[in-house]
Amino acid sequence: MRANCWMGKKDVRVEHVPDPKILNSRDAIVKVTSTAICGSDLHLYNGFIPTMMRGDILGHEFMGEVVELGPAVQNLKIGDRVVVPFPIACGACSACQAEMYSVCENSNPNAKIAEKLWGHSIAGVFGYSHMMGGFAGGQAEYARVPFADIGPLKVPDGLDDEQVLFLSDIFPTGFMGAEMCDIKPGQVIAVWGCGPVGLLAIASARLLGAERIIAIDRFPYRLRMALERAGATDIINYDEDNTYDRLMEMTGGRGPDSCIDAVGMESHSHGVEYAYDRTKQAMRLESDRPIALREAIRACRNGGTISIIGVYGGFIDKFPIGSLMNRSLTVRTGQCHVQRYMRPLLALIERGEIDPSFVITHRMKLEDAAQGYDMFVHKTDDCEKVVLRA
Image (cartoon, rainbow, N blue to C red; front, side, top):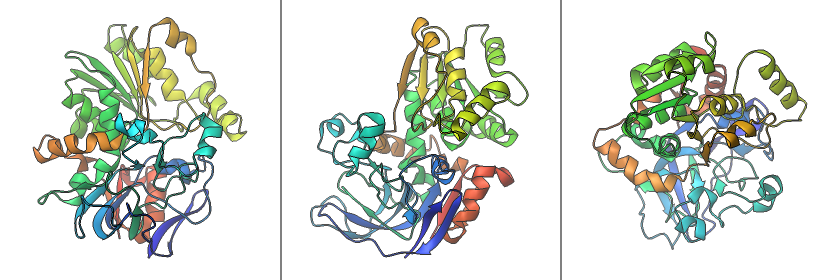
């Protein structure tokens, strides 16, 4: 089959690789009909995630048709259309029983690697390094899906791929980011980053009843999408304004009730702080650039909530713990427990309350994956979200 493979930093290629096979009685083989390039894939592309190996198949946002099943999978049948969640979860461990699927205790065969970095491992993840299990991803013609009796969600007739594809990751992630804010009527929510996850966090905050949603980014086309498509009420272009100062002006000096960091480890800014982080990152003295997170902590009102859904991989410097502790801030975060959200969010889509496909700007063939990655990372042609079809 053909698959998009990581060949090194900033080097992805569609290669011919062996077809996946059933390895366990709970496996399924899915013929991929749609897959997407995620913002977190760019961390792999840019070389910031360790334990990648040449030839690894990328992609954790995918869906398709079931073509083969292990004998223990009783809830699916050949021919079913399914969306596959990016965390691989067993469904039986204490974490899965608590619906914390992204920290499944049984699905990462390489847990010892993650434990050395983080103390404990998270679940296995499709196409996201050997530290996350070394599982082949879904930017391919076919994918093996472990624990297929727990993860994949059957797609109802009448919904096309683009309406439901993002149930695999970015819609649940954005929704969880907004949900962690515990939004009350009349509240102000600020969202750092208007990439696809940020836009869906904005849309989710609107669904959950936020009165005012302030979108923060530096690309005018992204800010337009936040206003016109996602439901933001206000925007800040940090190339033109000081984010903290503008937030204080907008909120009467109080600050937003909750702040969502939808940027993560490769955030941008200006001046000494940005130069400091880039230098330390280049020297391997700091793994992540936490500029958006620092701003969110400083700007949030006293007693407010910081919701972190942008991906961080390792260690950060100049973390404002004094601001966090002294001002009674709450931090909530985590890789999304996608399986928990898939059915409720599918119901929203079926009722017409939201169509997550509004984030798509480019549709390409699998063979064009390298071009898609280059466009996404450099934001050319107003690229917001790329969907690939085999």
